[in-house]
Length: 461
Image 1 (cartoon, rainbow, N blue to C red):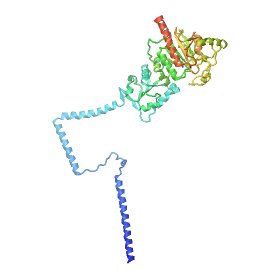
Image 2 (image 1 turned 120 degrees about the horizontal axis):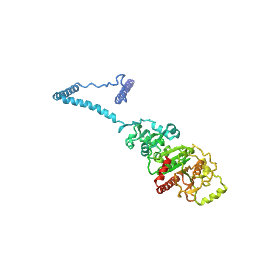
Image 3 (image 1 turned 45 degrees about the horizontal axis):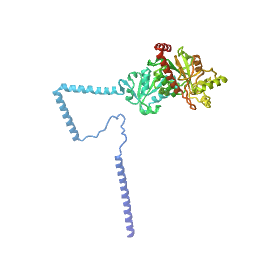
Image 4 (image 1 turned 120 degrees about the vertical axis):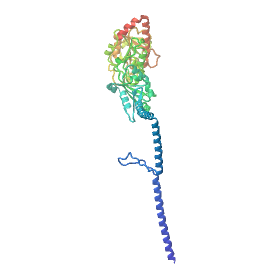
């Protein structure tokens, strides 16, 4: 009996385990089934040649009949209205057919247009802005491809008004483009880019949102504004290597009413972006002739011109000392006539080794020259057509500059400064001397009359 009971209990336990196992399997399978129903497909893949077909669930019979009755009522009402006034219905249908294409045509015509000018929208990954900016920043590529870069509304407007030819204009908003003379941008390629892209490639701290690429202009072909405020005064920049100094000097020359500006071959490129920003449009207000030899410079000056060179002699008390020293040391270097190197400076060797631009070197540093008399800048020196030579701060004046001053009976001009103070830089000296020369020439014109002025202007032209 005990054995029988044990066997029955064993059978019951085994059956219970089997039932639970099957139940667990059913539960698991049901969970998996419900979970599968809750999934949503990311994409529905249709068979080939059936991408336009959409499978719809069949509607119930009652809903389909109701929909058919409703459509029939609408159709009958429209037919009755058309029977009452057939002309109006045809007119409405014709008008609707005409207005629909007109709307689409208007949208297509006004898209990417502003006042009749069509512009492009830069797509993601467009590298045109970076490419042209990189080319415009390199002097070699500027000269090879004949392109310059202008940034800012005022500078671009000055270039367009002077007759410069635009090639491409990049702008961030339509309002920025409207600030420019649109009638002069007909032949240019207009590209709308993001402001972040302009900010990346701009050298300004606060970009204005417009950058233009122009053909490298020729000063002789620009429509420069001729005013009655100009004076017979020329500025000659000799070995000006710093772009900021050259830009400031060009701006001062335009403000002082100079007739022209002549640049020697050792100067920095006048169309460099930093020079353009520093000049503030002076390139389009007076003739600027770059990369000239000294023979060419003499050809661009009038016959009765007097050439003065800028010097940084400290004061009149040193004049007597210089005369005594020169009695025993007559030979003098050409660099001694430069704006920086008249005094004995222990840092002269450092200045000679430091070079901002490797375009040219002062090979005639040890050339001996005769002395040229000096004169304070505030004394009368501009009494005829005048040319002022400003030397760079690295090497000073060239030997040819001093020879030209001696040849034309010119003198050295110096600005007295307090002792133990470093000399003024080239741009500051040029501004002081140019405005002093303008003041003296205007005074001479007022006393001598307009006849003298007209004769000298004919010599410059």
